[in-house]
Structures are given as structure tokens and as C-alpha cells.
Length: 510
Figure 1 (tube, rainbow, N blue to C red):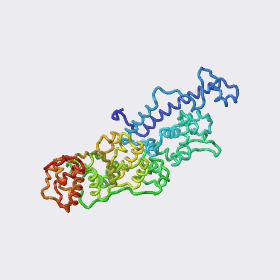
Figure 2: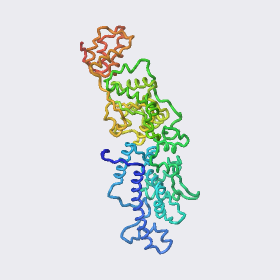
Figure 3: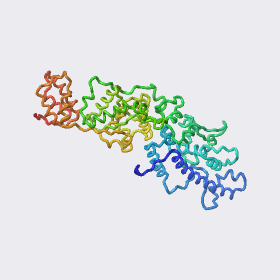
Figure 4: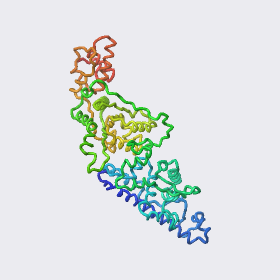
């Protein structure tokens, strides 16, 4: 379904109403089933023992031609004509469009932040519903056969498992989500109320008050969510890696290992960039976004429209597209040099997928001002190595950090359209034209290189090469000249070109 045809939720409460419609349908089917089974038992039972043992004989005594089961794991529940996956996909699309339009949604933000599964999300919604309406408390009491004045109206673990699970595997998986090892319990967002003697199935499930307040807010704020999931450091603006990947601490024997950074070289890289003027202007503006963000947001008032503090996206995520050697790396170095900071450069093709959580941790902790991710298709391509929620969290974190994130690929389509939307600008680095190649050849040699005065620069410029190709050929030719203890000539350059790129024909004369 095209995103243009999807209407976003107007606010967080509009989203909650849509989710509660789903819960209403689920509850209505459960109540109808329970009424039917109660009717079957009432017609056949002759004593209290018959009622207690009904789960043994209901499948054998059929009053209306249909066998009845009591176990949710064994009961072949009737399926809706509309596939549930289709509903979930439509809801996810509407959530995604809403988030892209800046509509803050509490439950989806929580799920993205803690990497919750769909069953865990539904668990949160079931526990949240009695906080919205007492009607859900009465329905839960009926389904749990606890219709007495002192009943709390909170769902039990047993009710949640019966409502949300269709198979034994789903039952075991969701049960683990309500034990001490689960993310929700570890962050003290989910409480299991009971006496010490109660089995897990009998315990009442309740959300913490701060989480309820966050989920029911008109505009759930990201800072409030960070306070919930990081109570020890409530003002820390960066996520912990465990929000993206629940990795044991034992995998990180060293708390923080520095990311690879490149210090700015002494020469002026900006003047050495040979790129089309519009591209140079775009790169210049990237620097301005960092240099003048504080003045525009704080002094000129863009950070608070009507006096209410707002979360401003001060970070820039840019996509650099171009073949190897077209200047993407040098442009990143030039930006870092202009901003007087180091460049953090990572080639994702060289990182094993198992190391990705540690990499995300270090990026979050060290928060480099200029971050260059080469081979970005490994994260943002058709088959990404990271979950979608982890990628969204990474982009959101970098968008709220006053810096520049540069993603480098050879061609724009290597990054899927879904991920290109938050990337602005998208910059194309073309192969240099003949005039640019002439400049690249002439600046490819340091001052100390002994050059032959008869080098045919114009003839060299006719070969279609990237700036990286030209620099590599120049260095290889210099090595050949040094070995022969002669000046560097056009012939040395042609031979180097033949060795490295095969761009020139063997023995071609200028």
C-alpha cells in the first residue's frame, strides 16, 4: 500500500483507540466462547465435581454436535476470514506514516526502544486497557471467573496467555516475557502482583504508574521514555545498546573501546576537492548545519515555537552516492577539517554481524560529531543485518545529536526507499569530467616529486578515471621512477595506468 494513501493517526489517543478496537474484538470472541462452554457445562454437569472436571469430559459429551476443548494450546480456534498478518501490516504502515509525520505514539515508541515483539506489545495493551476504562476490568473479571466486589480487574498471567497464544510455542515464549529475565520486568515497567504462594499463572499483571502516564500522554516525549528505561541516568540523551540488542555484559570485557577516527591532515582538503560547484555548495551547507545550529535554535528561537520546549532534530543524515574514488571519503575528511573535529570512519563491510551490537554501543556512547559509514547497504539495503527497529533507533539518535552522519554507497538504489526518506540531502558524486581530471592530475603529486617538464597533462586527462584512480596511478608511477632514480615521466604514468587499471592501451603514445 503506497504511503501517500495512508492517513496518519491524529494523535496518540487515536492510535490507542485503534488498538482497543482490536482488543474489543478479541474479548468479544473470548466471551462468546466462554458463554457457550458455560452453557455446555451447565446442561451436563450434575455436581460440583462435574464442573471442576469438565475439561476432561467436554470433548466427549457433545450437546450441539461440536467437540469442546478447554486448553488454549490444543483448541483449534476459528480463524477470521481476514488474515491477522494483514491487519498487523496495515497497522504497522499507519504507525510508520504517523512517525514520519512527527506524530508521537507511546506504545510503538516503547516497542522500538526496547525491541519488543508483537506479543509483548499486545501484553502491554492488555495490561493498559483497565487504566483507560473500567469496562475492561469487568470483562477480565468475567473471563477469570472473579466477579466479586474485591476483584482488581487486572488480567492474570493465565488470562493473557489464553487470550494471546494459539500454540504451545507461543505460550512458552510469551510466558518468558512475564518472568524476571524479560525486558519489561528488568526495567520495572511490568509488575506481577501475588502472594508468595501464588503460581505464576495466578499472578496479576500491572504496568508501572510512570509507564501508564507515558503511554496515555497526548504527546509522549522521548525524554520521558529515556527516563523510564534508564532510571539511573534519566538525563542521558543516548540509548544503551541493550535497547537494540539484549547482549550479555560478558561479551564486552572492555567497557568502551574507541572507534577508529582520522585526525585532520595539515593540508587544506577543502581547496583540494575537485567536485561540481552545486555539490560543493551542498557540502558547505552541511558544515553550516552544525556551525550555526545553536545560534538559529537558541538565539533566534527555532527550538521553541510557542514558548514550549520542543525536541529539535539538530543532526543531519546525508547519503553519499558514487563510485569508488569519486571523492566521498575526502569530502567527509574536508567536512571534519572545516568543523575542527576528527572523523569517525567505519566500513560496515569489514564488520562481522556478531560485532554489530558492540559497534552500536560505541557509536551511542561516544557520539562522534562526524560519522562516516561506508558500505551503508549492509544496514540499509534490501537484506539488512539489523532489525528495522534498531535501524530506526540509530537514525533517531543521530538526528537528535548535533552532528553529521554520512552514509556512503556506490549507487542510490543500494539503499531502499524506506530508509532514504530521513536522509537529507542525497548527494551524487559523479566521475570527474575532462577539466576536473586535468586538475586532479596536476594536484596528485607532492612538491618534492621530481616531475619531467614534458608530462602530457592534457593527454592524461582524456582517460576516464576517478580521482582515486588518478592518485593511485600517480603514487605507483612515483615508486617506479624512484626505483629507476629518474624523474617521473608520462611513460611512467602510462605504465602505472596499465598495471593498476588497464585503462590505457599497451604502448600507447601521446
